[in-house]
Length: 274
Image (tube, rainbow, N blue to C red; front, side):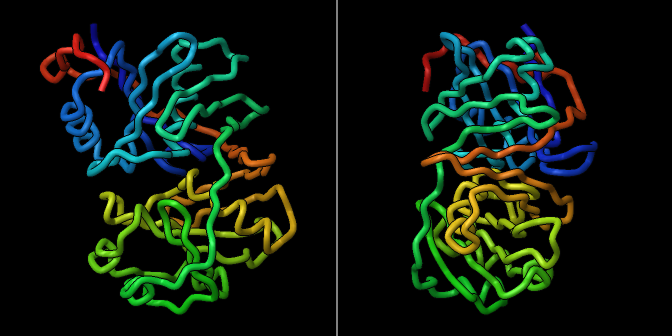
């Protein structure tokens, strides 16, 4: 059978905004090399692969270069596809089994809301070359399990950053979150996310980074709900709400392409789970 493949703009109200992700619906798991080849061919910041299993969906995320432990925009895109394709009822909450545990997605009005783990960061001296690669001075430097978090003095500084991606790729981490308080009243904070070591120089809108940004800005602003803007070229709004040790991340999604993988590149799917 043909393997369905979709392109979805996540955290976007219109096509060609937000963060594009590919979503591939599989019957069972092929080998890892095939997954990596498809992700490299798609050449988007993430390709999501799903296999239905016992009332939930096994979900894996791959960049063009590596597999990652958590991805927000490709999870949001996956939920949009599963509802669109009739794989789950329109009102149903979707549960995903991932490297980061059980995650879920539910419709909340015009938005899709994800239930993700709250990220924890703490103040950490920056490693050699990090600030030099960003070309900036930091108000604060912290680190969570996978990423560096850099607070700058203003939204303008965040927007004007022009990192040296070759130097930044040498810093040991999944990625670098750069953030500042928003200049106006429309948003609480702004951010950008760079991950050249993972094959993504700048990610347009990064749901997983907002898991850590939520806790960071909660400590500074004393709030538990935020309207955030990721100030990449494409840009995107993320609705963020802390509930205990979980974060709710909300945003819309637009399916911009539907199709299937050509017969010539379909794998032998009669393989065991990885």
